[in-house]
Length: 428
Image (tube, rainbow, N blue to C red):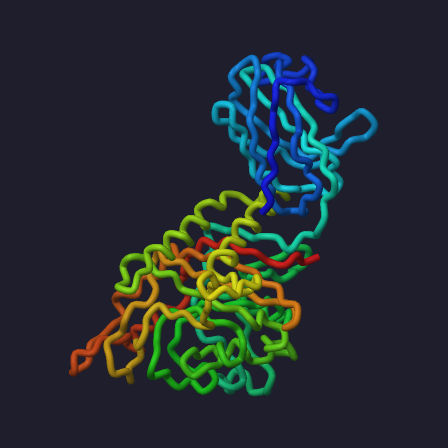
């Protein structure tokens, strides 16, 4: 990221101009602030939707207590705002701002210094703004995904569905799409089986489920059991220790197809301090990124959140950016399954072990594009609350603890609550 020095000096310069004493500030008339400046380093080129660090020194007749910056377009002698106002920081005679180039029309950055009810605006010329939006973001701090019950199909319930290619539907919200699915005129990220089938699995990323049976032949799964997150390829949902073959079943010619799902979707678990292999530095870094992202309502907020989520790539996956120095390179890694419990089936040899708990994070990653020109998208999911599953365990004669297959029925149709902040592609 380039840094540009914005020097605000007492000497008057020709290109500076100021607000006139004709506005209001909280009901009080805005006064002219006695201040001038000189631009010592020109902003020759900015990258659209990316930030530039602006720092400088300021002087005025009054103590400065605020600074705002906004992209403007010059038309004749008039400057028209074409971006959103962005706050700068004032520390004595120091000015600092991380300014996002949020308009391709901008010709200048308008810098407004404030001191009480007095203010003055200066215009800093910009040479060009290049580049395009790389994506957008989606955020929801109250996502509920439900562990759906077995969905009846011709295979698992031929009595009620005797004709091949027929079966029941489900409106249970079990599925998450990182990039979103166009449903009518809305882009949805939390979806049901009915919705995923209708688009043949397009952009489907993961499913929250209760692992218990092979839902094609109704046989109980022996090695694993309980809540888990699974990606949507047939080898995921239909795997021998996942058991959601019923979700893959085509009904009326529509079903979740490998060719359409978010095929290169991965999850990287970031456990909290409850686990013995807790990585305090890693957890703190991911936590800091997550907490820093506040809003994503306006175009500027979306740009800022997209950039902030990009810290995952820059800090933990910089091999995707071309870093080759073995002392600096980072690789995030990831899995296509994440289980709440490990070894919780009835045929295991060790007692069930907790793998995920509330407060943990999952970094999600989606690789799009081609092998020659990949595009990477990242997000963070915080686990807020799992359904209560403490009463579904039993102990065998050897003292091994596992999830009882009959008690496990109580885990269906229960929600996991998630806080999700993610980058995603722009869907027209």
